[in-house]
Length: 360
Image (cartoon, rainbow, N blue to C red):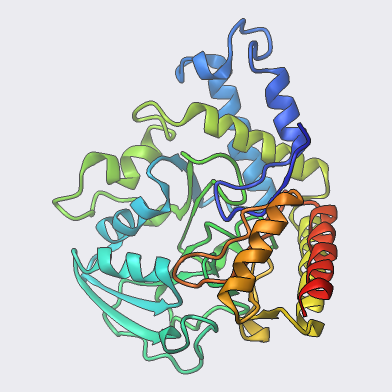
């Protein structure tokens, strides 16, 4: 059966060469005589897999030596608890509220301390990034939390807030590895893998070493302590071994195809193709402020729910799947992560034009 163009927000499309490599090693990895799925996480073969995955991620993001890379479980949602449990000293955190994932993180942080919302775009259903100038950073804030790319609404931070010396924590679940970043701008970065790295079940945490201490809150479960995972090389318990293996293949594929900067240029080309069509369309329109548009998640509508539904159905019939917008946003959403080829976005734009000509 022919592969479709999968615009799912996550779990999402993976590079075909990665899938082919994994398929070729499914029954036997190297000379091990077994699949990675069957392999002990204490074996030399798996130690090599996780070590290479970390080394390759460090190359891709130019991660400084004073930052630890952790391969964890529980998704980004678990980090909504893990971050305050480990970073709270005064029990205060500042948030910039840009959508559903900010709101969930806010709700969880309130369980452990005081939350201040510095700015929000909820008044217009999170269709823009709020003004970041002259933010009233709390004097006693332990850190400032942002969601750098908003999967549901299709917005992104194009600049970082001035935290006035406070630690910056960023949820990069849907934009990590999509464009160059300066890791040193952040105290902690976390990302669920299932959007732009690998399969669901693995979470990446990049944390400055001086923040890995035994000063976590007394109620912190052992599995939610960064120190226990850092001290044990991400193997305090059995890690998501196969997920880490696939992530490692994705990292190698990125390095072989030009790295993050090359991928960023490809992503801009894809996003511009789609946004240019939407900006000139008589039927479809983007819903996000132009200056805040994500290059990973493109949200758009016709303004008529019945026409939206017809488009989604007909797109699926033409091999363009998972274009329905999130229930809180409606309309359509095309997630065009690193692994979505330009040809897939071109096919979508061609179908948008065809649909428009038939439904105006």
